[in-house]
Length: 197
Image (cartoon, rainbow, N blue to C red; front, side):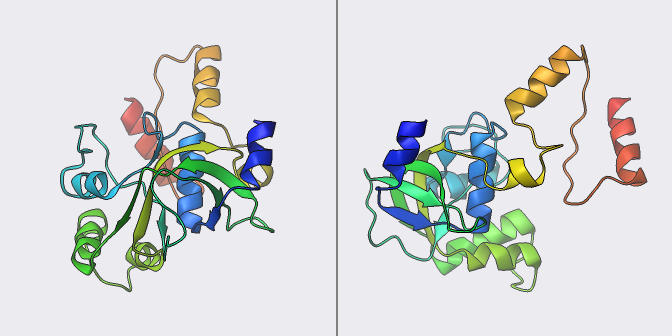
């Protein structure tokens, strides 16, 4: 890994969005298993409309690396993805570029409607999605670090492998996962209890 980190510094690179960086961390930490990288246009539109990739894998929302432009990059290139969330924009991941696709206005609206159930640009999710750009860079990635998550959330950040190991070590036979954007409160706790039952 140290050799790849060193090589990555000399690769062509692109600064990705905060959402793209978060997706890279999720891919690298194993949360998006069995995905190995960012989706192309065909998979994105298929996931948005059918909740399945073109090959039939169930997947609820597209996993994208959107940028404003990728003029200096071509399919077949190996590039470094730079982290917008850490000072100095260090390399977060290395990508084997398989495709570069540009989404039309109609396609962006379709994805917004299917994922967020609205095309209203004032909706926070739609606004963030549209602000990333319309050019999708897709292909498998190798994540070199977990951005700021390990440092800022040292007490709670775990990879999927670490979580599974903890579940096994504790002998738990039933677990409930709950994703929330804010700290859990009593209503969330009650939802988890209901799910367990």
